[in-house]
Length: 302
Image (tube, rainbow, N blue to C red):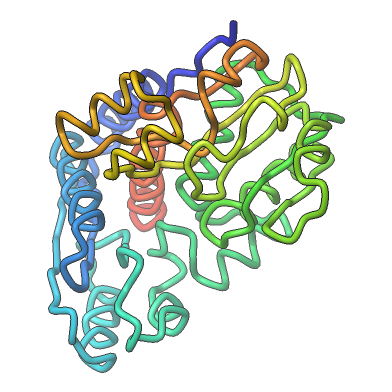
């Protein structure tokens, strides 16, 4: 039976330290969050980030823009926030509407305030191993592995998913820790066979219950990054079984959340395993707060 890696408890430990450091250093970190449009999931994430700021004594400034906002308007807002001395971190909630150039908008954010770690300058710094803002979810994954004493030196790590937000940056972080890293994707041949070679398996593909027992080597560490919403009973029955608690939740509440890993199938094979929810998710918010605090401290020291 796998030991569950408690991301919620670790996130609480991290945020408790940030709260104490805010008082100790006499700082009031400022985070600006920009939400374009009315995507329900994005709105939830933004509220969570703003709530976290309030709990830690941060200054939080939210900007809700209509879905048809022009690039000129969004650009002007970002440039204004770059010059605002009370703002130490700028977060553009993704995804943004298709008529906006995502890469262009992200590149307008000052690298020194890019607390999401998506600016090309920070991406480049991460690639060469220089100090930078590390994307929040990958930073949280490494913190969780450290918390549970996972030594990455010489280990085989497999990352399923090649997104710029999780897959690629977490692969770089694992490589910096001297793991031998393979990145897999939709065109990887014999994917289960490749995954079974992993001492550390990171699932970040965005497909519910995609990784099952055929992907996992006995004794492996399995990190499930996926958060998938299942709101169709027929799909729930196919994934979880007719009488599963998750299927019952779909019947009662209309939806349930699950990861990319088939938890029940993998739990008896892995040595360490993250649950969904309560695994990686809470650490993403905690690391956003950490990046924002680090930015405020750097500005104060200049």
